[in-house]
Image (cartoon, rainbow, N blue to C red; front, side, top):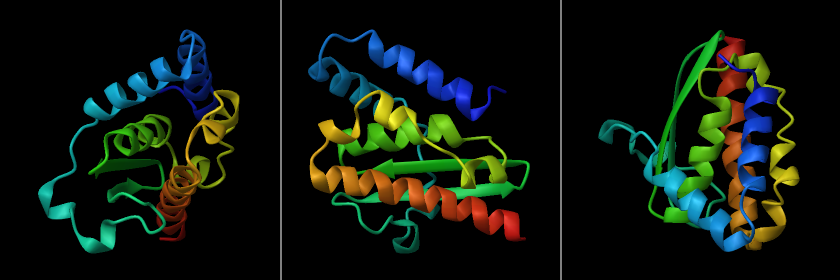
Length: 139
């Protein structure tokens, strides 16, 4: 399995193939459409990420060696954002996730091309995923 750095480098290369941000947004929306759906029993209020403008459900399971995430959102662009984060983090060791430097977000220029509320939501998603990983490390 590729490590966090390899996956981030792949994403940076993919985003460099697009000429403008409209194409990048379309790509994000397509990523969201390919997101494996979260089981209905995990679409609970306690799995909604706080700090997101749209509703985002995130479920994590696994152990220290490999954390697995499933998610869904009621907004198509947000669904693409969480799909991107899942691509980076899914199946990675808890320690790698909790200490991850997600430099690809800056490299692809994502934060400055999102509205302030979406950028805050993105940070909330990252925080929640790292929190799940820390909880698994502690067990």
